[in-house]
Length: 242
Length: 127
View 1: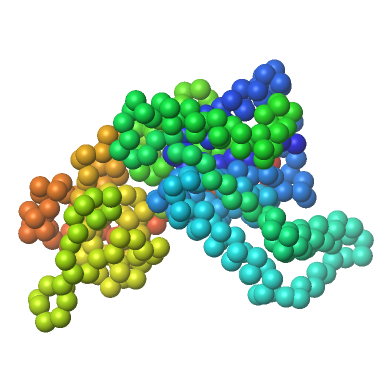
View 2 (view 1 turned 90 degrees about the horizontal axis):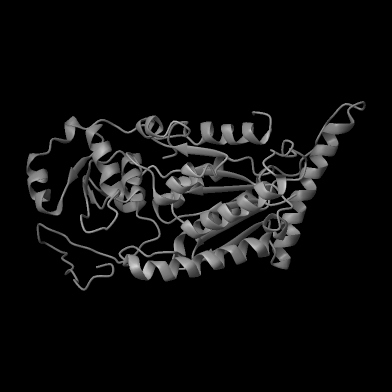
């Protein structure tokens, strides 16, 4: 199983380019066939969560707080090197999760019927995953990981120098994906890509969004304004995040 | 301020105008809560944080940005009467002419429909 899920709200072009390459490798490997439905098993889905900056991070954190954390785990958060706040916000949130789990409802007694073998087993798997988080934390390896990447372009940077910085940022992003889940890049795994266009885009898509839309890279492509959905009919409008 | 060279002067005490500034704050929620009017740039973070606190807002669009998509959001929300939208040259005019009673409250969005579609796609049962 490869990197199962990646989610992005706008920005962070290099990660999207590497995902494009990853998806290309995937499609080559599977020769155009959709894989059988992803295993919605007890083990969680490896999730790559791409944070933009400022408002984009707020949008993504609204999604993350709503996600079922036991399904989407472990979580790899990615943000730009020059963006100090985004990973910190994600870290604060992840720490609050562990605290809530540990402190608020404890001890937990699960009750199930004698003839019901599955329910308690599921609860046990979940509890063990919690313990793993705790142990991992002490060892410095967490259930949530935080990764920094180069920006392809800073606000106000000229388009000519942007070419060099984009190349650097893209190679770095590819390296990170290889490091996190080599199977994906080697084409052995399947990864679903969820893209959410930023709420700041009302009339037209961002460059990242346009690439993913036109090349049909994303499995699900969300926009946050109905008029944008009308312009891009393959996109999905399910209300706004903010 | 920011990456620029202009440094404003702080004014406090008995003057009719009090001026305070900071270059960075991890959370400006407390400042927004205390304000009766917020004048902000067009970043979506600042806009929605102010709207969430139900404060009257004037957004000043930076026209120097190369890919100026920022004005899209401010203009859309101004059309829906959630805020006032101004340019640096028209800010004074906007402050003089605006009527905050014409603003309508913004109903915050919800991530649940998006998350439920993601879950559905992955084959997870809906909660």
